[in-house]
Length: 488
Image (cartoon, rainbow, N blue to C red):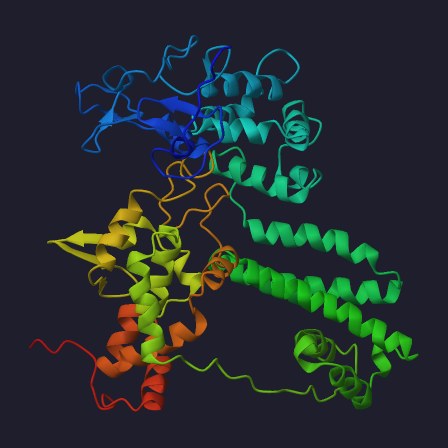
């Protein structure tokens, strides 16, 4: 009988990350490699520590250095038969970048066998991505292929308005960001465009013509006017447009509530207002905007809008703030991205809306000291968080695809030219147990006890009045400190 080669249990783990692997996984001289480590190895370029040549370096030397395929031995041949470059091959001995270029040429063909001239910048951006596998997966989606072909063959105008005709909206938003990043479309606020698209789909669902007319006026003269004003000062956030959606939805619900009781907005009384908010003030407080607009524009009589004050969450204790800070250094099971974000919250009391807008230029290394620019002057980063921050700069996520290859964001997002959103970062930190809002409140209160409130405000980008009030609440002793240059 023929004997079978038995695979030892210890061999069924990745030689690099020790995760379990399946039979049939790539086997190199060092052992089996999981899919993730195999992909990263074939995307690693640099100077080989063995021969000193700049090329693909998927192998590992005993001292941790990078080795080319020749010096490592037994890894295989990864030279593309089409472009003669070393890379992970996709099929027929051709690398992923060449396969992606062929597919994009087909999708962006204007019908004459050539890529539509206006879409050439998009073609160049996509085919040059460092991780072509992401582009192949993206361009393999039927809706992506349909949308690209519609633009290439001029079935829809190559404008922001034309893109609004395509579906689904998430895929269109991603494509719009790519087109803006490579200069095919002029810059526009993506959140404002998404809200306008949502509004155009939402208003026709209102069945009562008189209600729909009121809501159109409210959306045009209050909601969109406010959003455009905010967009003129800086990019809109998802929370700002979500607030606008909530205001419109509650306005629709309030008008339906009046109609169910046989009343119109012009006949609304204080009793109707009180009955509406009695059904749940917290859930319905965003109706304030519609009611105040309706009274200003004389669509309803004057009434008193109820108001309940809300207070900030109670800060956690200093011990509760320091405990997760200590864990950040050694928790290798937590992505470095999340640990850096949590450190900025717990050390410098920074809100996630500001953290996600930081750039790599805001991290400075001068005279052996790491500084982070949150205000003026930059704030020093204590050890061991300084090393953690420098390590993160070299391994930021979302920089290997066409969306953010040259991004200067500290936390690059999945959208072209966009940082990670606070709405995406907050659940990650919450799931890992990092106290964001109470931790930020505790940090700022501790900081104003250690230094004058105006100094803390300028260093961290806070308002002087806000830090002064917090210092008084915390019992600070810097009340009579005079801000300014004290070096004279």
